[in-house]
Image (cartoon, rainbow, N blue to C red):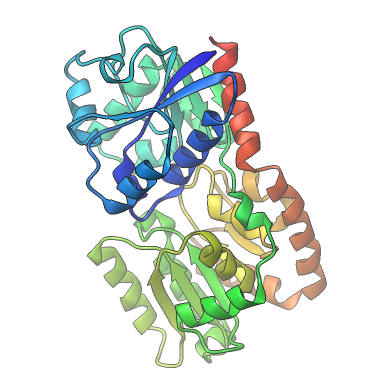
Length: 374
């Protein structure tokens, strides 16, 4: 029996990103394995979404520190106590599904590297230093893509020999057919008229997601300019980030139909994918891209930036463009919208590709990596 303490910040369940989806999916599956004894550990939980999820874990052993997770991690950067075993008990591994630096007594530490490029290119010097130190101290680093692994070894070459490929995935719900009632309900939820097709983005509003450029490029499509093709941006961001997007939308003219309805999860997100003409993902910095898998699993065409990890994930199913070229984005979308037979062919390819990125398969890789080094 391999004893594993899973450590994460449960407050991240509020407006969950791909990192949180990864963390929860791996916890749920690892806890079901007969040869693993899993204990969930977190800091003080203040968000109701995190508390609800924590309470939903039922009989799974779990412990929470009196301090917030972020404060605990700050403390561990300067002090070796308290080791996590003080609250979690004796463990073989501490598994952090994010780039956490933790203090242990004897347990080995496994951390997940989600996006080295983002952290080292767009992050502060302090973030780069702390992240690199977490990787150096870990006994095992789990990397979500081959692209990310290459960036990791460039940034922290000391990790060589301690990296395992454990990709992200999509929840099973995205591989299930979307009921017609859900398709109709999501239109009302998004504020879209019946029958109006729409392009979909699923991403936070950080500048690296490149959404202002997407808005400008989409506005050059005749259908968008005429109000015959809507643009839906599912996500959220800081007030200034949202203001930038709304200003870009306002610059397209009064006939454009654009919606920024916030995040959606589960069946509602599935329905948003199912009803979309395409998912458009123009990110400048992406080391996986869970929405790409979710969309392909629903049979939605995907138009993707031709850089970072997105070609690795979308494979031959994607329409690719230079994310810094407005006209290139327009050309890719024009081709996707106009070539019906090719769209059907790539949609079929996308379903097959997506099937290889399920959380069960990702958890198999995680469990194997922990076993091999135990």
